[in-house]
Amino acid sequence: MKASLIEKYHYIFEEKLLKEIEEIGRYKTVDAEVAMIDHGDKIEFMPLVLNGAIKILREDKEGNELLLYYLEVGDTCAMTMTCCIGGKKSNIRAITEQPTELILIPVGKMEDWLVKYKSWRRFVFDNYNVRLEEMLEAVDTLAFHNMEERLYKYLENKAMVLGDGRLNITHYQIANELNSSRVVISRLMKKLSDRGKIRHHRNVVEVLKFLPTA
DNA sequence: ACATTAATTGTGT
DNA sequence: ACACAATTAATGT
Image (cartoon, rainbow, N blue to C red; front, side, top):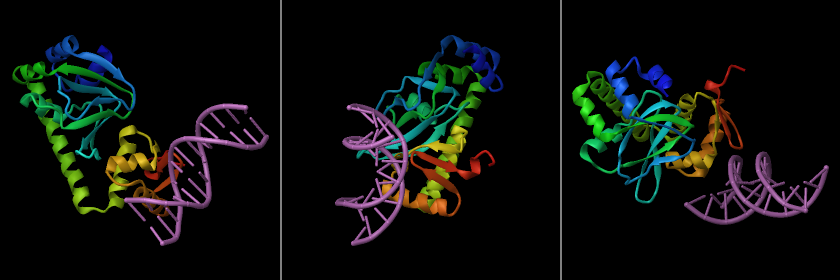
């Protein structure tokens, strides 16, 4: 665990902080598709992602889901930070997208560290900013672009995060994450493949842009 | 190898 | 949005 923590974070955190993280943080590995946090859960830990990816979803009262953003290596969750400070419950759902390694920091510590370590303040602020910008972009696509563009952006982004242009996913799952219906997605998928942007077969979507040049 | 079933995708209304 | 058809994958015999 030491190795991957240091490998991924030594550029960001000062020595003393790394030591503390090592002492206090709980190292954990999680399989793909595991729900880490659910709507309404009390948040006790703040995650530092070492490997893999976690998707953050918003859910309304009817249970409709909408993908907000992904947490990747070097990220932590902005929602968690606000929740912790206010002692609030979670607004969101967090589900691992891939097998993921992470370190859990008890929320108490994160406040201590804000006072103690400059690099920690930096990290928290930067993360917050990145998230805010990502959210703005998400709002843009929601508000100003049609579903077809949204779908393509979604696929692109997912391929990016997974580091693979070959996605293992069904139309139905996509529809859920975009809060649309399966039929709509199917029809748009056809359009996208007509346009040569993707190829798809059962359970597979290939984003051509990300495919190993064939 | 074949038949059965379930899940996924396509299409018309 | 719904209903149904067509296709494909998974499983049992």
